Length: 582
Image 1 (cartoon, rainbow, N blue to C red):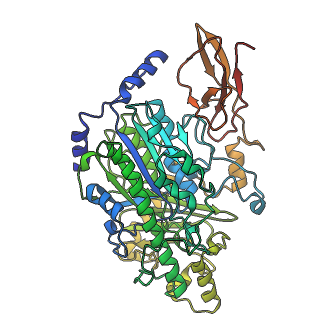
Image 2: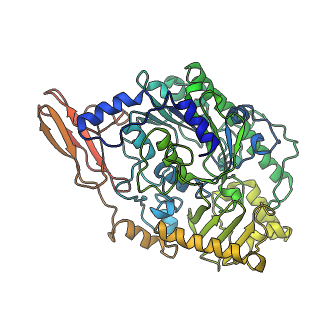
Image 3: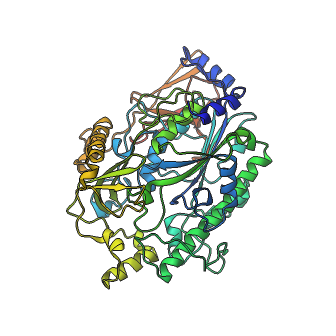
């Protein structure tokens, strides 16, 4: 047991009680949920986009980030945390399910778009029938679950997966004393923040408005609407000596993009401060577990979308109640697939067998992981097939398409001035050897990098006999992992879709709910295994909250409900209305 886990268990001993492992009847299940919910810890996730560990707690002194730095000073800084992918939607699937995206059909970015470019139908990831979203597990155990604002899971979330999901979602809307799991997303640091014309996303101002629905409603609701460059606060001096990685050129255009990146980070630090102030105003700061991280690595070319550490490594800080373990560092390897099982363990919930991650902190903690795994497949209209495994020092990469280069002409990325600068210098034959590597016409079938001495992953040492044992170990681990999660990288995306749809040419549909009234209670079921059943008043508008069906619903002659069933990855069922009057 790590010292961090032991100290945490001590401080939470009077706060966190574990719920019963088995529920024997529907009525007992409902009663247990109510009794145990008051003893569970509040959990707040602060989620950034497209950001590597370029902050003070990780040694980058370029700018001050007082809010994030204070979190680190009062919390535990994890130095070896990695996404499963270098892009957002697959990464969010991993977090939501506790499963590797490439094991459930979630690793192509995105599954529901770029149909004209690819000729593929829209589809969704299809996890096993036993799988639920992390938020649903917590909701089933008494948590008030909120997501503000981004979803992007590679599948449509069932209506009952969250109590609230949207720009108004806030822990303040829960019942008195109810524990909460609140996810707050900050998108100012997103790759698009480097595009010209430059400006902050106006919708992100909602973080300054707390739960004021009227003010939030007046904001533009689409992230593409930005402040003008003249109206964008300059929070970071433009003439700082920004650190430039060797794979990018040192030119005024690149330096301007680096300024934008750090200026966006400074603005995000202010937004986080506003959210944490709300927590303090509510008297919840010292009895909430606060977790801060980014959805994958940095926004720059050769960072985002890549399986290099520049695309996978993220900052991750946990502030425990009453600042337990303040200022400590933790270097164990952590993957995004570990987040869900760890959170369930902290909440006293048994970890489901289908989850592929491990509990790295709670009562169900297992031995520290030895390896991190990652994958890259399609990005918008362009496909590659890459798998990677790393231990604390070495990374092994297997390229399933060595005949094509690393660089893919993704149109979205080419809106970044730095990307345009790279292409200009390439055309003029002015790139350095390090900068040219990304543009080589072919890839090595296998790559090995010594991350201790080559953190930017420039020098492939796969053929150095000195590392033959390391190569053998990591090759074997990759083979084991691919079999373990049922990932065959040789399967084409069209065949993957057929596999997900059981060889059908259309997305499977969740069977409609069946309604039975007995002894004044409405029993609801669906014949589709794994279907999530949600209901609301039949006269409610679509934006109203949906209840998660867990036990029979008391009904009267005046009760009127709209009910849907939805297995993740399937199409939602047609709604069924319960209305005894008609």
